[in-house]
Length: 156
Image (cartoon, rainbow, N blue to C red):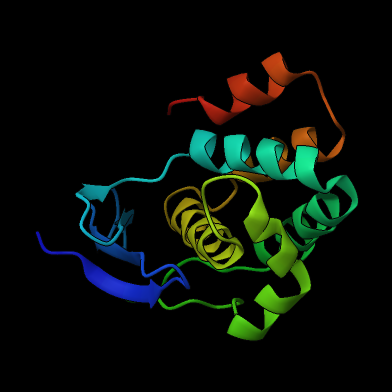
């Protein structure tokens, strides 16, 4: 099934979805960097990148994590159509965290869009699920890395 583009990140990476089979509006998040193969982002990719950003600029990384928790994870709704639409992300949000692009693998807009899509996917398939919320709260509380990695690699 072909990738349906949702957003193109500042670095040219196309973030999109393909149809999933768990529910009527289920989807899987995918991305394709310029000249690279299609990949599926995992919670672990986001968390590792946040750790790299944390080393580079802890206060700003924690502000971005607060934004992810309070303005994305706690506010998105389940998808009501396929393909889903971004509900929260606006390109103007990137400016606040732009300096974090110096650290890690992924640009800020990529992380915000991927995290939002993963959260919409969780809400669509598990309306009372808290996997993403718990993961980001562990990171925010500076839990030991074993706990955060364990939460990031949890499989349903």
